[in-house]
Image (cartoon, rainbow, N blue to C red; front, side, top):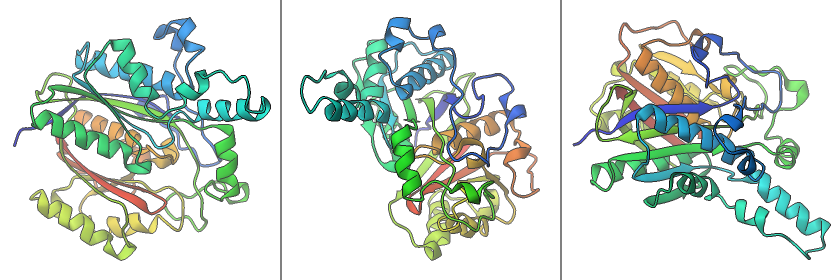
Length: 353
């Protein structure tokens, strides 16, 4: 079977992930209910006239995709695939607000047009004048995984040589208010959050945008090989170990051959039980977590995939991510496990390029 490589990785998050040596300055965030992404100076990447018409998620994605393509040395990809959970929520809210304030009359279509989930992929394609395959996956917490899977199949089937794959989600005031009412977000009295041993429900919410270029050929910038992806919508907690073991068997790997496991501990006592079950399998692997750095959101796995790429390329694990003290001499295989509130479980297997 042909190999698919991740040849570049760019990420905008609540950490300063665009700066050099950012891994040395990662700061856990456990005392704020909602986290805000550290945004770049958009004027360096996007014409000022266009910035005013773009929502945050479109702006973040435009910059992250530009940087990913630049690093991979690709001017125009063969395909663009984006995964998102909430899409352009900001423009959706603006449109609905206009409907209410104007009694459903004299509405401008701009916010409605820009509120659709595929706006991000469309805007990137327009900027690049890319007329190839353009698709958006909206699968809550597994949107990035479906996007990576689609890109992998396209490359293996010979339909594309280089595919731009991204994940993006933004926070908005109204949705955050609703999440607080539904107890999705942790109550203030339950902060600071203990991500690994939480006794309370709810999470700290975040946002961000991560983009990768997948290609059939390895180059100087290559981070990792994308070996395999497994996705299931529903899973009982006592089925977790079987789910992971079957995935390892399918990929001819033993537990001890997984050098690092990145788990999505979110601080939600109800759903983190899955990660605790998973960690019991890997007694001889480096156990890592990341949502204390990114916050929880629909496509938070984009941040973990970005961090996994950095770990494989630099052969170094940031201390702030470590759950245990095990550290292998060489990091070859990394397994990522994520879900959102107990639904949409995904496994991503990456190997050193």
